[in-house]
Image (tube, rainbow over all chains, first blue to last red; front, top):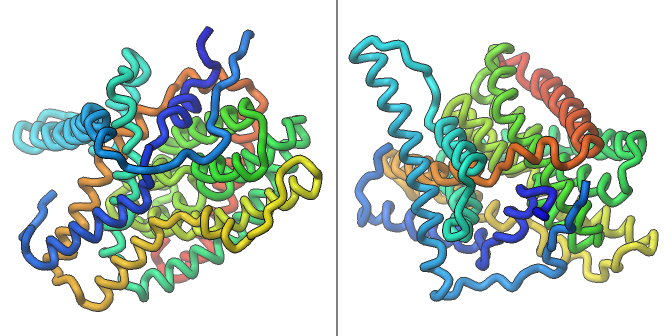
Length: 45
Length: 365
């Protein structure tokens, strides 16, 4: 017998084991610093 | 139809990033980026065929390709277990993209548009909470399921429902049903909102603000905006961020109500409760915006940060497709989805009217 609502199961059973907000802010500030101080010169799209 | 209760965490999981977890994330992260990059490649390849060889090909944005490819994979062969921990990181890439897009907003814009969004959000909140509660009663939904649907549709979808879960202590089945209904409605918005926007000849800004106000989940709101255009995606993020800021207040209101009914634990430290529920990534968005406003970055560097946010959104878009199960459209029962659809139509029409009222004078409709 499979669970009735698969999407909810996927969302709730596979939560991140870390704080995505803190990691996202840390990563963003680190990348912004690398760009600001020209360690990364340019990022294209 | 036999049903099985879906196990949901009753206590917030201890969130720590341990080195031994990292290898388990790699396959899913590679899948997210692989699908996103494939979507971008498909858009460019079809454009090349159109312009260089005059072959008529559909003009589909990379955003939609990433979602469609994700949907195709998850609804045919499914997402193998080895990929699932990494696929869940789509939330991280989404928040990283939102924080980085702060570089494209000067604080004056944030204050003006964010202030406008806050006013519109306040009106939307009152109306949508009232209507969803009324619809829940009309269709005899369990009261706590009605509360979850109201919270999810008025603020920020799954995040709000998960935040409310620990506060109002609903049945696991109600939580699962509410999440599935909100995600199903979000999937429908991906295809209906852009069509409505084009039919009404909406501008990038007005459309973006509208989707940020009306689409529930942050991921789906961002995608629904980005399908319309990069600028619409940015404005959708801004309006959605303003809306998400209310999450603590609404969840607290419901927690106090259910505690007064003797059906949930009383909230003693309300200030701490509000801080715990506040989406912290908004602070990162504001920090990057403040740095950009102060002239910390050059014009070229702001372009690089903006491009970086697009790269971060790419796997998030793929994740939206990968986690959506189309069979949930029929599996969740007709009453929650009818309440959700009617409520969402109401919210979409009301917010469209609000945005029209706000933009009709400046020619940016």
